[in-house]
Amino acid sequence: MIRTEFAAAINQICSERGITPEVVLETIKTALLAAYRKDYGAVAEDLEVQLDRETGEAKILQEGKDVTPVGFGRIAAQTAKQVILQKIREAEKEAILDDFKNKVGNLVSGMVQRFEDKNVILDIGRTTGVMPPQEQVGGEYYRLNQRLKVLIKEIKKTNRGYEIILSRADRELVKRLFEIEVPEVHSGAVEIKVISREPGSRSKIAVFSNREGVDPIGSCVGQKGVRVQAVTQELFNEKIDIVSYSDDPQKFIAASLSPARVVEIKIKRSNKEAKVFVNEDQLSLAIGKEGQNVRLAARLTGWKIDIKGYKEKKESKETKKGEETETQTKKLEIAGISKRVVTLLNKEGIKSLKDLKQKKESLQMIKGLGKKSLEEITKALGS
Image (cartoon, rainbow, N blue to C red; front, side):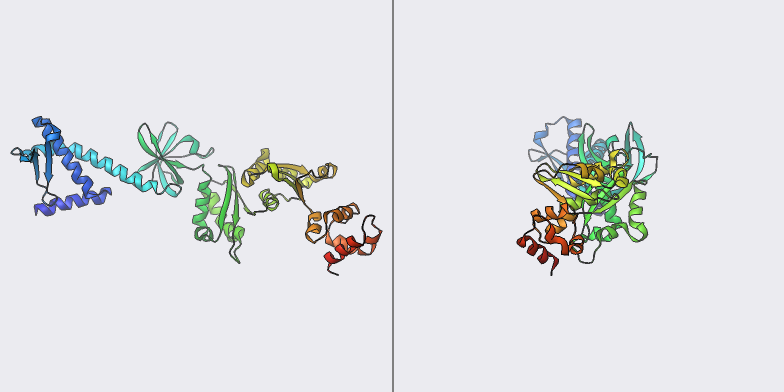
């Protein structure tokens, strides 16, 4: 019966605290040594504790000789109680921290427990986490017992020991919320490539899928916008733009400036600069309030973006060396027409294959277009 009670007690402690039996038994041995030294003044190096893990019977040995005093078990229990509890608490905290180290970068649901200066302390299950001011979102007001989804950002060593740092401001929070709401993101069918965020105000996310038949933007938006709305509500109505990711910088930059429509883009790869032209009525939309739209687009793409009205384009100098321009001219080049011929056609107002077909009969009148050039155009038109 004694053996069963002792073993049951050890197992219960281990189960409740999430620690191993060896940790508990070593803690008990340490406490018994501390109790013996306190009452009998022995040197620690000379002592050894034998503890029967089945019965709980303890013996104090000094150089191999049993020196356990009569009634020591009762006295030791009183002295050792606080030491044992402290050691178990430490082991429990260490086990919890080890568990949460594996959860860094994941989402967790927490409840606001209290406030310490400017820090928000949240109950996240087996322990608490700290959300410091820099990880909070301006405009969000936290109250006691409020439930929030937070990102486990890191385990940080402080003067008070290790702390679990939580975040509502990190851009990774947006990604994790989409993983919850969008099955295609969770499964990997849709990949969130990049996120740029101004917490509490607006986020842009670039999505991509190489799965046939999967629409990455449609998947994230959901029917009637239900999926993206769920994320927006969790972020207290933070606006979210979902755009298509592309390895082609021109396409990606154009998409990143959504909802504005881009007319033309010139890029300079050497220093990752892009000059973007939009119609006058799209200018303010492309730039955004206080420059937010273009700022987020620049962070999303990694390119420096200069927005200009389309009228300015007509007055601008020719494309500098090293720049590429994505216009109808580019489309003519793609069709197989050389750059020199494209330039001659542009001067005559021919900027697309459609224009070319309409003016096919008068091409011979264009100065500079010889026999070879005309054959090139004929081949491009497929006739």
